[in-house]
Image (cartoon, rainbow, N blue to C red; front, side, top):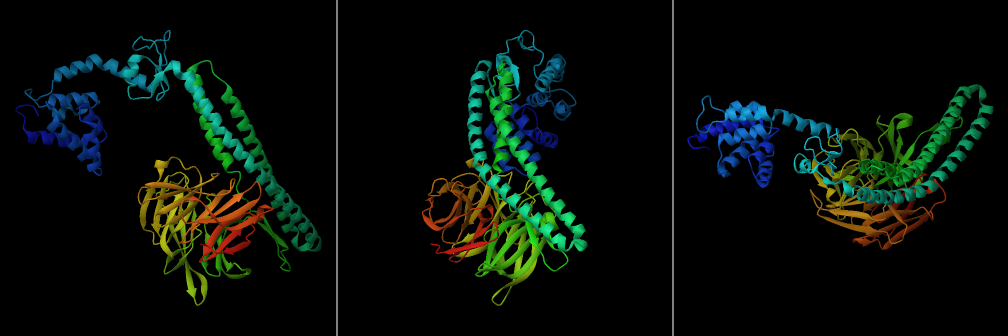
Length: 601
């Protein structure tokens, strides 16, 4: 510090400033001329204590600066707008090391209007133009600040906007043209995705119509026999069928709207505004709309199995209609398969049904899991976790349900308990989209991984609730909508909706390698993936030919070994999940029928 000043007094001043500059410690460091490398090192070394960061940045300045005077420190405080702290560094009497009080006051009085104008210009922008000139510098506004969305002059570009994204106005038409071409290229796969989703959607509509007709026919026939006893229920059932038809109409309107939106957006992209700034702003808005349409169209191809009619004879209730969605299955023993049904719209439950995959009429047990969050999707791990006994694992919203089974003799005969594990790291506006239990070489494991819809972090936990690690995969860009997650050792497999290959990430806290698995048949879209302890097992579908296959592979590259080939004629025959026990593969269809194959390599 300046000659004659006591370093102990300086430390006292630094300590007082550190308590007041918590939000401005980087700003004061930069104004004092500290190197960015020093600031970053302090940020890392003292990450948990912001006051200590400020204290260290002042010490670094004092140690490295050629003239670390209190005058310079006062100037820096003024430059960051913290004149209220002047009294901490200004002695009661002037002298060497004191602040140039009069000089600072003069500077404040002469530049007050100018500084206020600077703040106003950065807040409001240079809206008041006079003959195309900057009202502050009276120079031509031939630059555009993309960060602030403002026309500016050269002086502004090297002044208040020096760290912003600035380029000449003359290049705006060319940049708008490039963005317009980019949007059109983005819309092309969106349109193709819609075409792919359109056919299964219309097939689902036809199936729904047939089911409604059959349900109404049965209702009319049985109501004629039991009209006196069930007249009230008949009306309720008919009302529910009509409500389902109304829902179909709403889906039709949504589909038509999507087509119109895509066509309308294409027309808007072709329009070029006369003013280049307006044109650029319009292009940025259109790009956001194109991304939203891509996501909305991508959700059209969902397999829907949520309208079931069940006749119940000789009970006084001749039938019932319920809303139910079959989620998938998981093997928990060599002859025990657990079906998972989402019945939350009907009774507020996620229902587990344990049955024999070779004889679906042989039911071991049923168990309901209460869950009132009817809007969040239900997901299931295709492999169970192991901690003493096998634990099926489900996810809904921001919660994981860990099901503990009771083993008695030759089978698991009941559910002991269901542990609810809230994943607090997932925001309330998000939900779990994939969950996968960890598989090791020839062994099951107590760990599982979850992925939510708004994150690039794969979070790993144990079934006891302990958070193990967070694997960040953002370095490989946006993954889009991940539909299936596999977990083997320290490797994660992600299937992206609509993609034709599977991304494999390896590493612990941060993924350090990315490879791929690719189906050998062109047009085969992977939908589910698990690991058997020996190899990856992939379920793929080709909607154009109504085929589905199961492949396996122990290495990256193409999936070479075909385990099973299947076909479907109607939506109930579409496969929705795949699970495995030792050498046997079990593929569950939307109708809840199970296809069994074997010979896993």
